[in-house]
Length: 196
Image (cartoon, rainbow, N blue to C red; front, side):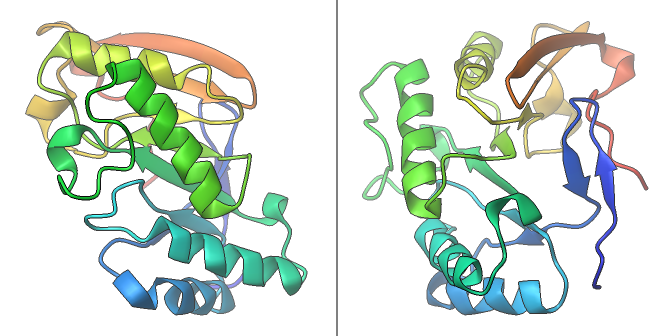
């Protein structure tokens, strides 16, 4: 798996064709991320969702990799904002009573702290919120978060991709300071297309 091929997203971000997913690794997260790098992975997917992910464990691995000469720019790093409905009520990484835009910002700050970075290559909305308006509010809150790239929701179910009524899908791309909201007709699908 060495020399993982990258492709350039529609937002101009170099993304490996395959990412190492860190869900459900729990206390083994750090060791497994290190093992993934040894196997050749150069893309990491995680989430600010303590219920299923150990972001701090990913961050611990990334710190160790830095001591081995692997620089932050040598790999792709993405995380997710998970709405309250997907969080363990006892371990929500943001103030659940805060306005939605503040929850997104607090989650982003927690992710940067957990991952020991000020640069994320991708920020994904883990799942749609209860209403299209709330989903768009979350995406818009993701736009100004610095060097991030919000993409489509993690859920691929067609019903979950429907946002502003039957006719519109909204996907926000923001990479290295360039934010471009893009709206597509219902039959166009998501504008972030992954090669097969």
